[in-house]
Amino acid sequence: MAGFLFDIFTVRAMKSYDIIIIGGGLAGLCCAVHLAQEGVAVCLLEKNTYPHHKVCGEYISNEVVGYLKRLGVDPLKEGAVAIKELHWSTANGKDVCIDLPLGGFGMSRFALDYLLFKKASERAEVRQATVIDVAFQNDTFTVTTQAGDSFEAGFVVGAFGKRSGLDKVLQRSFIEKRTSWMAVKGHYNYEYPEHRVGLHTFEGGYCGLSRTESGSVNACYLATVPSFKKSGSLKHHQQQVVSSNPILYRFFSEATPLFDAPLTISQISFARKPPVEQHIFMVGDSAGLIHPLCGNGMAMAIHGAKIFCELFVHASKTGTIIRQQLEQEYERKWADTFSSRLRTGSYIQQLLLRPFWANAGYQVVRAVPGLLKKVIQQTHGAPLA
Ligand SMILES: Cc1cc2nc3c(=O)[nH]c(=O)nc-3n(C[C@H](O)[C@H](O)[C@H](O)COP(=O)(O)OP(=O)(O)OC[C@H]3O[C@@H](n4cnc5c(N)ncnc54)[C@H](O)[C@@H]3O)c2cc1C
Image (cartoon, rainbow, N blue to C red; front, top):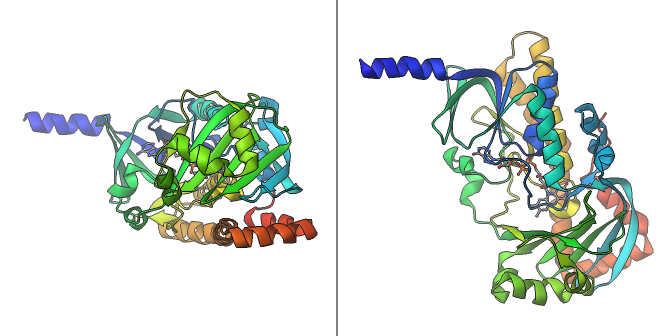
């Protein structure tokens, strides 16, 4: 009898939505705002509280500005820094500056995610909860959180980033492969040109520098684990390996850190992932991460959200949504939009980290600066309407 009452209680307590979004980074938040604007009943579940810092280069391509404005967030009005120039240096400090074809802006994830979170909270239900299970049965999803709450929805968006405990639960194949990348990020006080984003390589990695809305400079570097292990500690790695590039040496010896300690992440995977898995629509890094040196991962996460939301809204307005059709359309559109960018990003990363090719590339870019612009265009898209 007690069991029976408990079951009724559980069923009654379960809340139902059109869509549940798991993860409230840029992809999840943009989905939540977009869908809620269209009258879709949305619940977003994010494990962390806002605002919080994230390991990220914090340079965002201008291609998403129009779309962000449509969602109600105008980064430049909120203090973002307009960036027009790329300063690139090889590991031995040979450097060149070029104008960026489209340009971008510098804004901390602390600020940008928080702005979108506030927008999402106005119309959608946003809850702090860690999702531990997603089950699909009888055309309905049941999403369970660590606190023991369950939510039901017809559709689920997986926007839980490049690596989450959920990837294990869902037995996604990429999670079994070991990766050799880690990343470190911090904010610093330093005189740095406002309109510039820096990309500086060193043995086994590269570091981005750019200003944020607060006036601080974000320094974020990726390094291979073998390059890091040789030094034994973060401090030694920064002094001996990262700072072997004279430009980075100057930065790290003169800049004043603003965080008590830098933020670090490891196990960064650039493996290919299906954009739909177990009927979950993967958006943002859950669907694939481009090498950060392309400076386009955030724009891709935001663009991916737009693609999914437009397909979903269109399908729901034209009648009953046929799940299989929506999944196929999303997979096709995702691949058409992003596959070649991911491939190009991977080639560029391999070239830049090989000193011989990086130096050869430098000579070519010095002679023909337009070539680097062409390469950048290959990893970026046109402005989103
Ligand atoms: C070192 C580094 C530097 C980068 N630099 C740049 C750059 O300069 N420019 C650029 O455009 N891109 C850059 N990128 C890429 C960019 O950071 C990502 O592409 C972008 O953050 C993707 O957004 P997202 O919403 O998919 O994922 P995220 O922003 O990672 O959001 C995922 C969210 O899901 C939540 N979550 C995870 N699991 C669960 C769960 N089980 N339950 C509930 N919530 C969960 C997490 O807490 C997180 O908030 C960089 C990436 C790295 C690794």
